[in-house]
Image (cartoon, rainbow, N blue to C red; front, side, top):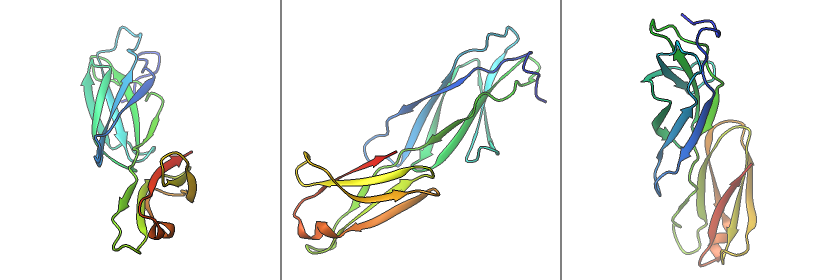
Length: 175
C-alpha cells in the first residue's frame, strides 16, 4: 500500500556513473539520493527495471541513501525510482524516475585480410544520433558513418576505406 505523500516524502534520486574497466561488457552505476526530511522514515527501497511502466526489481537498502547497481549491460536502458518507507512498511510515492542508458564500447573486428574492410560495431539506444569518426594520425578526424537510433540495438558497418590503409583510428560521438 502506498502512503500519502504528506506522510513520507521520497527524496530526489541522483546518479553517478562508475567508469567500466577497459573492455568490460558489464558496468555498474551508483544511485544516491538525499534523505527524506520526514521523521517517520525508517528506510528506503529502490525499484528498477527495463521499462518505465514496469519496475520489476526491488532492493531494500535500509537507511542507506545510495546503492551500487551492478551487472548492467552495455546499450541497455534501465529505469530507477526510490521510495521511503515507515516502520510499518508503508511506502511513499516513487521519486522522480531516472532513465539510464548503459554506455557501450565501440569495437573493431580484425580485418580478414589485407584488402578487407574493418567491421565496426556499437550499441545504440532510441533518441540519439551516433557518428563514427576516423583518423590516421589521432589529430584530424573525419565523419565516416552516422546513425539515428529508433530502438535499442547493435549497429554494425564496414569501413570500406580502411581496406586501403595500414592503420586507422575510430571514435564514437553521440548526441
